Image 1 (cartoon, rainbow, N blue to C red):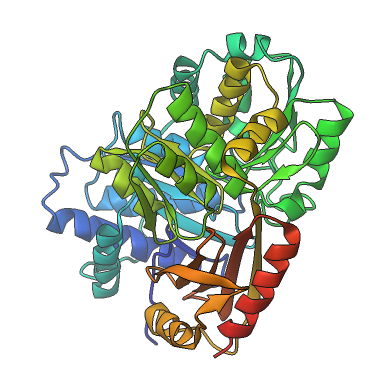
Image 2 (image 1 turned 30 degrees about the vertical axis):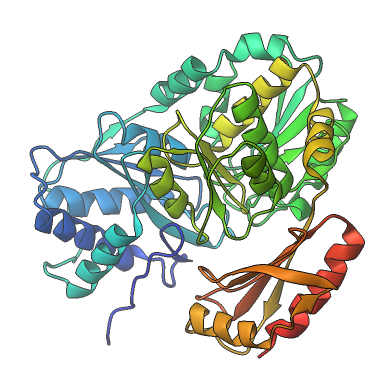
Length: 471
């Protein structure tokens, strides 16, 4: 029987535990990674890989299995001795480790696990993962499990990462300048394993769902989206907090609830960050965002004479632009944000700390900060729907061309200004309203995104997008 094909998606390989995610496939990935390193000419004496893992079932065991394969290929590696957030591993690849590996399925359901590869502070870039996939398929060497030929080295690097965060932000001083409490929903994820180190002695910080639960409580999936923000909203209102933050299962995604207990969409969060970076930190340069995110960032960039660019969905594409040098800010619809001066990866704790800094410096709460955005750049009503299809769409571009051929000259009495087809089809109208129809590529799903200035208009545009999406 042929081995299962291993494919790295937007950020790593994922599968159901004991089904496609099993010891055999973890060994195959580790061996393919080892073979790729050898082919690229990395000297084993210079290589050092840090392997982290999240709080899911057997993540620590899978991490040690991965390490065993590396050790038996004479690659130096260190395994974390506790669960850790993914951004911590990204950070370590800018210090003492050339590569990082994280056993995590991020925001997915508790039944999933996965493998992420990190390099130079970010996720492995697309060409790298494509080449690693080829080596996984080649099976140049045996990936049969063996005992490591030397003991697996372990280490606790959490204090190093916490120190990096504390050095970047004067956390106690910032919190002392905020009149009210801040609530964190850690969603039972691995950010909880560093939280106390970062916020030690901060009395106006409240953490919920910090305990270790591989089933992720009532959430099932530790994804910081509005339907899972009910408890965070309640805690913010109950404690009269200035805001609430939510982080996903491995700590790289971020969500925001304002002081009134209202969920803020990523299309509202991103412009607040960009405006702060240009206003208070005097940053100027290129702005990049996933094609599935909103128009307010584009309006800010236009007003400030900055270049603006769309990327396909997947933070690795944004990281490429950040590393390029002229990009000051990147954002994606799923709650990932990064800006100049950070490691080129998303980090939920870093984004939370920036909002704390923002409130302290503006001396305003989140809702007042956003009101200023609305006053200057307009209103945003952003919605998303997933539609099941009969089969997986094999070519996103072909699908986009078919939808494009069916488009009328006007939509909701607005002329079409631009059509973007880098990841599905995004149709932008003359007043910046837009919709994106994006086939999953791995599941029989169409994802539809819409943004206008009101709920009424967004529902009307969503209705149009649903109708034209069926081919």
